[in-house]
Amino acid sequence: MRLLQWLGRAEGKGAMAISKKEQIRALLKSIETGDPGPVAVVNEAKYIQHNPQTHEGSEGLAVLFKRLSKTNPRVNMVRGFEDGDYVFAHMEYDFASRKIGFEVFRFEDGQAVEHWDNIQERKGPNPSGHSMVDGPTEVADHHLTEQNRTHVRNFIDTVLVDGQLELLDEFVDQYAFVEHNPGMQDGLENLRAALAEEGGGGKLRRYEKIHRILAEGNFVLSVCEGHLAGIHLALYDMFRIENGKIVEHWDTVEKIAPRSEWKNDNGKF
Image (cartoon, rainbow, N blue to C red):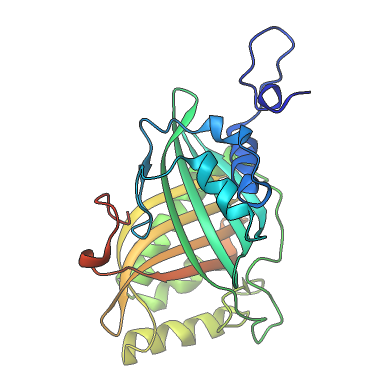
């Protein structure tokens, strides 16, 4: 089967309709392979790039990915999700160094027209022995998507932004919390201690604004903005929800370059 048929873009009764998530999986994999076919999922005439370090429209994606593929990168989508017009993915990259990232794409009329990401150096394992990407990958509880989205939004507003740590156990499972941040460890009380240090000493990140909450079933990704010691940050956090409580957490933190260094005018968020 030809690649464009596989992507569901060929005409005719025999063409297979492929999910937006799988189209994005193929698109990102083409950074590794150099295959130009998956780029068809992107409407480059409308494409809005929110990575401030990327020139917008200066080079076609097929040409860019072909050039990047010659550097022998490795690209792996660990988890992929759909939320209406959005696809969000948890990624492993190995370019000149190993990185972990979240990628977000917005679709319009069947094509990707907007992109955000948040990438950091891979670190770990953490004191509990977890990497930044291990753990469950399969979505469950689709019927609870909106309930889980609301739960995470309330957690961030109440605990991470407002600092009401006394309410932490209303949101996080006290018996089964698994942490993938490379500098933290499992357990509700360890999380409480880390957040108390953050609020008291200003040594850790400070959450200030929620930009987007994306969800599919029991997985929820939050896109937030904050600071650490005066450094402007993009904060992406993924949560797994079980029985109405947060039971697992992954994240990436990326410094936002000063406006004078941006290579496009679209902003990080």
